[in-house]
Amino acid sequence: MGRDIDYGNLMHDAMRGLIRKVLLDVADRGLPGNHHFFITFDTAHPDAELADWLSDRYPGEMTVVMQHWYDKLDVTEDGFSVTLNFGDAPEPLYIPYDAIRTFVDPSVEFGLRFEQQDMTADDEKDEATPETKLAKAKESQDEDAPAKAADIVSLDAFRK
Image 1 (cartoon, rainbow, N blue to C red):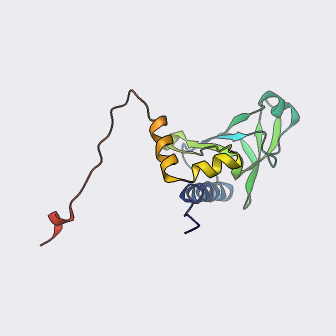
Image 2 (image 1 turned 90 degrees about the vertical axis):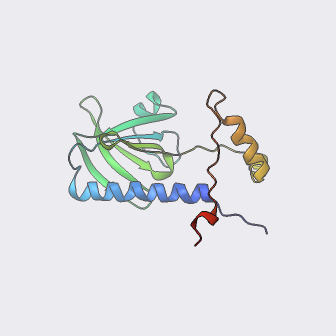
């Protein structure tokens, strides 16, 4: 038994696919109604492309808004390029899906958040055990929040 199903990465891939489909639709037909996007991304990602003055101003992450004015939206398998207006100065950007940290459409209260994992090889080895994952989950629980009991359903209640 040497392999596990990597649900975390599978979920992130599915979420990035959803973003891609939404952006493809917007590229074809425009933003419908009041929809608009807040997209936060890692400006230091090796495949991200933005003007030097923007990466200097936002060295770690940056949130862009696609709402009233955007141009040249081109959606690919790995990311998208778009020209946005920064103080009356149009600037082209290329944002790889892997660089996206959050994708929010506040008009419908929809949002996706990608957990960032900066692990060393030893951390990855430790993370692989279920016991370590459970311990870390318990550590990260908010101490002020009441513990939530598990809902247990007996199948006997449904048998005839």
